[in-house]
Image (cartoon, rainbow over all chains, first blue to last red; front, side, top):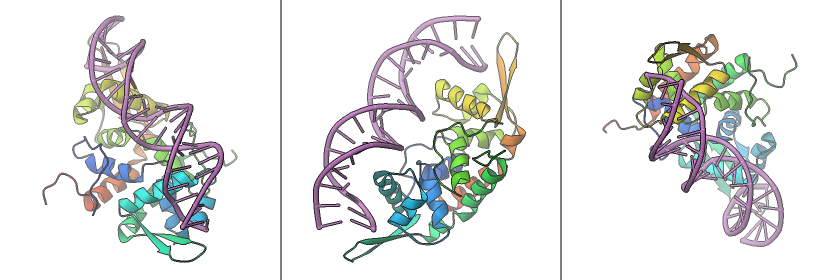
Length: 115
Length: 115
DNA sequence: CAGCATCCTCTGTGATACTG
DNA sequence: CAGTATCACAGAGGATGCTG
């Protein structure tokens, strides 16, 4: 059970907040987690959902998520390699958080939607 | 109503998630928001709650939060300067999100708590 | 297909000192 | 008290090419 290996954490009761933020921080972790909520995905499937991510970054973020015990990485010994990514129980437990983020975003963010 | 002036946002439905993350990303924004949930605070009061933050960073983060319309900055024209920081309606609307973060953190994070 | 290795840039963060 | 101004740096993030 990986403790918060990130460096921060200087608050008092707010530590928890920072801690979670440290987990989903990283330019793509949040969205990756969000997409994985829908179910298992293969590397390129995730990649397709993040138009501007580079493999390096995606690999990177996935590895960190894996290290934090949020994502499960399953490698199939096949000729055309296949790697599945899914949420661990811990990862899935983040669902309410991700949902809260998405809900708020949908409600309070002016995205590309016209008007 | 400040749009997401940050650069990212490359997802599809996950945009919202990224968007919010962009707002509370920044090493101290999360905790600052958390502490402001309890009520208005002065600059040094916030600072005292974040042991390791430097004025430069705190000022910085507060200004960004202000620019994003999450925090209200009130300057009093006094001799010993006084500046109050409080949440705007938009900022306060983030409460469920912050709460979700804190709740998850308390439940799933191994912090400094013994055992 | 799903990476890894390199190289490079930029910006977020920090330390320190000064000011109205 | 609540900043502002500099200087400096680590590492997050990106571009590209190669590989089992």
